[in-house]
Image 1 (cartoon, rainbow, N blue to C red):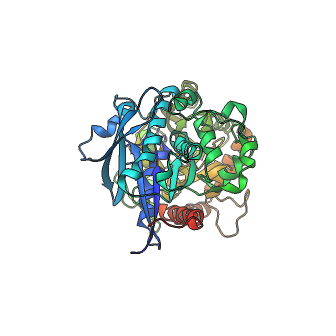
Image 2 (image 1 turned 90 degrees about the vertical axis):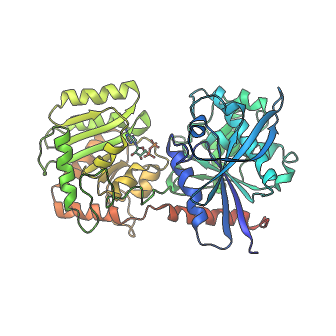
Image 3 (image 1 turned 120 degrees about the vertical axis):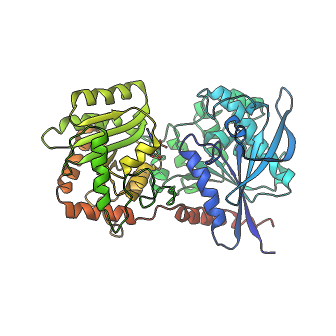
Length: 491
Ligand code: ADP
């Protein structure tokens, strides 16, 4: 039998079982895409997620495949593993008392979540032994599953039966370090690091402990993998991370080209494709109608689809637009988030009643109509590990104006700012995070918009780009293979 590469992928959430944020998209798509690759050796990748209460309430059937105990200093905690498959991907769900209550995936209280996820992380390490299937590599993600990597590092003899897998930690959003979770981890025997190169304040936080212990670290875009080494984006860990720079790489996330497809999207009044963008115009008119904005095809329709969070630079956009009163534009903003930003968005609508509509809702259907009818999407993020909105927008012919940071910088090409002779322009970038520079790039975009021939080229260039998961999956596969090559495959 040909050898296969065994990978155990740990995540706190995964679509279609449960999705709260971007990690759910990644964990719901990437392992399947890797498993589907026609490669030799074949990747036998398996996903492990918690059996959250919201999943238990579903009708899908899950088969119990193992039960075991997880050490805690107050007494062993019983765990059960259930099995199902999702598009040929083996999926294990870990149940046990920490997940028995009807609690959300993230409670916002890291003391509580630390207990849940330390239990989950350690249970995930117990699982392979009960399946008679040993991983060559364990791929954990973010602070919630980072304790698995720390546990392997500090207790190698306890996990002897795992056969010393390579450990890889995915960083989706560095500032979420898991602060306050330290005491919960200690309850599971995962004590603070001593004499480590971590800053003192980070010695008991799960993400820093995972970063300290992982054989390799992967950030969700090449640019973000460099940015986290700087004081501006390093969340206080930049010096420590610079010491591990040769163990850090970046791979861009993908989007599902079937899920996000303007040619088949049933939420759009009119579907369209690369060869015929004409129906897109009526989608714009429909939006102007729906939101009682002037029905004028020549007025550029700006959209924002975002969490209203300081990370996303929404305040910069609102301020920048206030500066641009000498040329026509309309804005539909869709988002929810902090009170301050929600109020500011509403205020912009009050101050610009003929131009602005602020929809303070989470509305996936409306978001699709906006991607498929808006002319320009504003994404002025202060930092953006990867970002999906710019990729979705480009697929729908909505041209992005974004800050040159993280994944935005890696996907939006603007030869006025970054020169990549291999990739044609597909949007607009600005570099410094302030509203004057943002206003300047919006003006630049509005000028180009006036030349519809040039605009069409930007739209087509964006629509032609390949943001599929398959591309990312191949890069992850190569990374896995490279990391375990020297270790030898187990079966
Ligand atoms: P993040 O994960 O940091 O919020 P991303 O750009 O990676 O940002 O992903 C955001 C996703 O959430 C996109 O699919 C976007 O369409 C969607 N989204 C954000 N806000 C809303 C909203 N108010 N209504 C519907 N979809 C939204």
